[in-house]
Structures are given as C-alpha cells and as structure tokens.
Length: 401
Ligand SMILES: Cc1cc2nc3c(=O)[nH]c(=O)nc-3n(C[C@H](O)[C@H](O)[C@H](O)COP(=O)(O)OP(=O)(O)OC[C@H]3O[C@@H](n4cnc5c(N)ncnc54)[C@H](O)[C@@H]3O)c2cc1C
Image 1: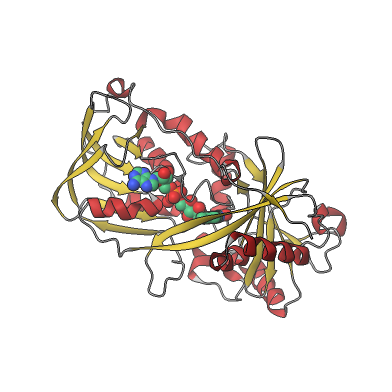
Image 2: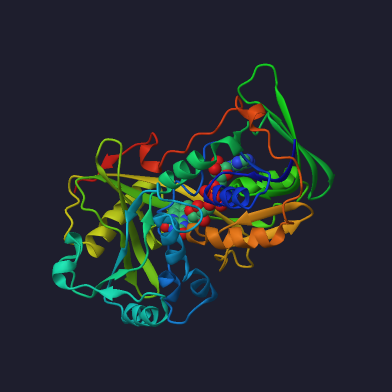
C-alpha cells in the first residue's frame, strides 16, 4: 500500500497529527504498538498551560512566549470551532487556581505573569474561592488553563479516525527496510492477532515518529542515533477518597511547589494527581518516603483539607524530549528531520498544536497516491485507549499518624 505519511505512536501528538493530515487530504495511517496514550499522555495532568509556570522567574522566557496562545487554541477545539473537533473530549475544569506560599519571589512572579499572560490571573473574592482554599491567607487567583481528561482526548480522536489507526506487535510484527540511515523504503507489518502471519507492506513518503520514549527504539530501527532523546523522570503522587475537587498550582518562589488535578475513578471516588516540585524531587525517593513527604507538603499547602481518611499511591513515568545540553526541559515542541524520518516530541501536551504545525511545514503536499482502500483493513486489529494511572493495578495505602 502506498501512502503519503505513516505516523508511529498514537498519543496526543500522533492522533492530533493524524487528524490534521487526513483533513488536508494526505493518505495517512497511524501505527500503535500498545494502547493509545500509554506513556505520557494518559499519565499526564491534562493542564493546557498558558505560560504561568514559565513566568514565575519574572522574565518572559522563550517557553512562556511559545505557550501563551495554547489555551485559547485548545478551547476553540473543545468548543468544536477549531480543528480537531474535540467536543467529545471531557474537560475536567475550565480554569486552574493559583495560590502561594509566603515567599516574596512568588508575589513577583505572579505580578510578572499578570502582565504577560494572554488573560491575566483573576484574583478571586473570598466567597468565590474553591472550598479547599476558602481561608488561604494570601491571594487566590483563577488562571486561564483548562484541564482536560487525557483519556477522553484519546477516545475522541480514536472514534473519529478509527479506520486509519492500526495496532501492531513491536517484537514480532514490524520491520523497516532501509536505503540508508533515516531512509525508510518500506514498513512491513504482521497482523498481531492472525495465526497466518497476514502481512501489510507500506511505502510512505514520510514516516513521523510520535512514540514518546518509544522513539528511541524506532530511531534505532531506522538507523538513527538515540542520543537525540532525553528522558526526564517524575515520581507522581495520587490520593483517592473523600477529597474536594481542586485543580491548580501552589506557587513557592519561582517553582510550582505542588500542582494538583482532580478526576473521579471508576468506583466514583475522587482522585488527585499531585505533580510539580514534589514529583520532580520525588524521583530520588522510594514510595514510602515520597508519600511521607507528600503528606507533610499537602498539610502545609492545603491546611484546610482533611487527609486522614484518604488512600495514597505513587507512579513513576518518564517525560520524553529532544536531548538538551544540560538535560533541561526544551523550551518548545521539537522536531528532527533526517532523510524521510521526522522524530517529534511536543515537550508539553499543551504544545501539541505547535508540534503539528512544525511537522506540516516539513511535509511535501499530498502526492497523488490512490486513496487508502480501507476495505482491505477492516479486519486489522485496532488499539484500545490506555487507562489512567489510578485505574492500574497497584498498592494504595493509608497513612496514619
Ligand atoms: C506525569 C506527567 C504529567 C504531565 N502533565 C502535563 C500537563 O498537565 N500539561 C502538559 O501540557 N503536559 C504535561 N505533560 C507532558 C505531556 O504529557 C507530554 O508532553 C505529551 O503527552 C506527549 O505526548 P506524545 O503523544 O508525544 O507521547 P506519549 O503520550 O508518550 O505517546 C506515545 C505513544 O506511542 C506509543 N508507543 C510507544 N512506543 C512505541 C513504539 N515503539 N511503536 C509504536 N508506538 C509506540 C505509546 O503506546 C503511546 O500511544 C505531563 C507528562 C507527565 C509524564
């Protein structure tokens, strides 16, 4: 089968790109080895950042400039007036809240952010504050950062593009034939569920790798170096039980001390994901130590919330990015173009639209290949959507004391 583009990896980047290219008339297929969004997207907190996090130091960094238009762009998609049409993607919260510890620098960062952000933070009157922040001694503000349910984003895009999304088995079901490093002539797939080794051979003008950490292995298969990629680990904390709904950041100096997002699990319990500094520093700790720290931290940043009867757990996950000199976070979505292979990392979920724009600029217009004959692919297995971390089997504990 001849196609314009093959995308490998169906997280937020791959699925958004698939939507864009198929609308523009490209003959395009997406190949997924596991479940859609497994890795980062479904593990993420789903915040569509508008730059606040990058403004806390006081000066508009490149990251802050790049990200400031993203909330309104995503909002258009979520309302069905932008592309992709994400009306079926659940929005967990329309805004994030912001509160701070006493550090003078956090006051300065918030002031600088209010000058720079597309929509400045709005200070809330006491009666408009969310319950967990009702008596917070400092300012509580609302910022223009919607929070989406990443799993729902995956399901929405799968629903819209199912015929174009194929599952394969990475170990026994996919091979590249190469003309040289980064020059992929064909991709051979074996139907992962068929005992008769049904094969599909794809010849594509361009191959786009959007497999997150999986890009390393795919690059090796394409004869390219893996030194181009870095992983930055996180050790996230989760709570479940009788918790109030809360989405927002507690700011301390130039850092987000804790970023909390809320959802509801399949048994109807409220779940919190806690990221920010706690999860960055938590990488060095085992689960027990991190949970002890998390409990003390949350008692400081949210003294009004009763945490005595909740259950706690953690998960580890790596962020996949283009490699940078000192292992720092890249400031923008990143793309490498080698031969007919493009390797893509959005750096942030919020920056996926920017990544897709960059990829489009590198692709030739659709060639006049025949439209894809989907009837020949109806029996090919399709991937499922990955489940969020709190639905995965793991130990939950109570922290009494
Ligand atoms: C804990 C955490 C919280 C985060 N919170 C936020 C946030 O609130 N806001 C924000 O903007 N960003 C956030 N991020 C960053 C954001 O999640 C990522 O930048 C983004 O989801 C990356 O999407 P992706 O599609 O490029 O990669 P992924 O989501 O990692 O998707 C990769 C896909 O490729 C598949 N795959 C893997 N290997 C292969 C292979 N070899 N072949 C084929 N398929 C393969 C996977 O199954 C998956 O479907 C967070 C990240 C983490 C880890």
